[in-house]
Image (cartoon, one colour):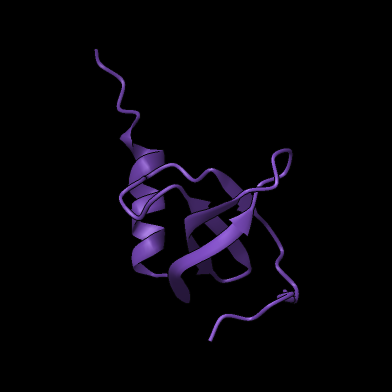
Length: 75
């Protein structure tokens, strides 16, 4: 019997459809301080980011988002 491992991916894709906000942002790398454009998704108090908007597995999930501050807001 084959096990279905699509549940996690489907829930992540579904989560993006129900997102509070989503869009492209630039973030600075951790070790090498270069800037990368990433697709961010905010759903409730969870913030996810992906390499691009077609990805189903986030590069990072940040839980319990309080307030975020931007050093240089993009208008």
